[in-house]
Amino acid sequence: MNPERRLIEDFIPIREISAESAREKSIRKGHISTLHLWWARRPLVAARAAVFASLVAAPETHQKRTALKQFMIDLCKWETGTPTLEKARKQILEAQKIRLNLPENTPLDEVPPPKVLDMFAGGGAIPLEALRLGCETYAVDLNPVAHIIELCTLVYPQKYGNKLADEVEKWGNWVIEKVRDEIGDLYPEIRVGEVLVPEGEQLNLFTQSQPQQCRDAPWHVSTPVAYLWTRTVKCPNPSCGATVPLVRQTWLCKKSKKYVALQVIPNYETKTVEFKVVEST
View 1: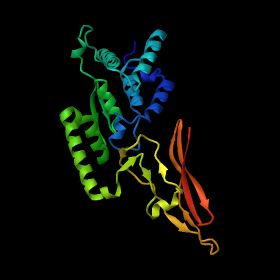
View 2 (view 1 turned 180 degrees about the vertical axis):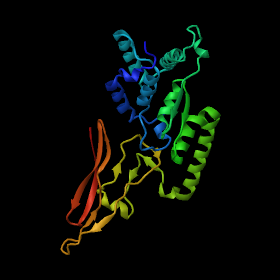
View 3 (view 1 turned 90 degrees about the vertical axis):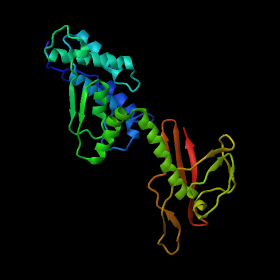
View 4 (view 1 turned 90 degrees about the horizontal axis):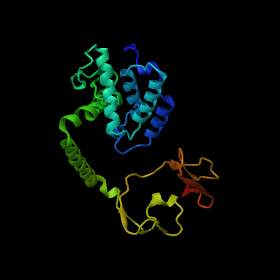
């Protein structure tokens, strides 16, 4: 066996890892992508596959290659559990022991973990997965925003533990209260199930000849978090003069089995454009 030839140079299950990476994009809860938007963020499962396959020796036989393929498919899943990760760490240490020419009877807990350095760590996907696989990890990036993201992802959780989560919740609530004091009047609570009557100039664009009854459970209180708005221009044709909204696109939600959009309805009498929310599955 050539201990210098790694699994990543031999074979990895690209198709399965790619499918899992694509599925990961829709995961929001518990994913580091929710910490801060980073445009060049890499999928965690792809980073995990790259780190593992770079540290484990290439298989000697077809049988071992098949076994490693199935193991990597199990390892490179979002729901991967502790037993699978522990097995991966063990395989990495076994490969490390061979690379360092340590005696065969050396216990794995005495084998120094491999060092992983990411010179362009960015959002921290590679160093995070290297830490998850038990490596001694170093992350570097010249971008100060990336550096802060890496600290919050890799350093502070290990340094402060649950205390960090308590502090984040405390100061997050402090920010919310400060914002609510300043602009809370612009986001009044809505009782879902209450009859809504259009008020104000901005609501005139919506077709609501009759008050609309909400379909959700009655009297559930919700707080708006955003408004959809658009600029309008007046048609330069003297015989027209219609008010035309400048809308880039009309989709409100475009997901599998859930499509919600605004239907544009021209009103030729008032020379305005009205909108209606439509849904499809």
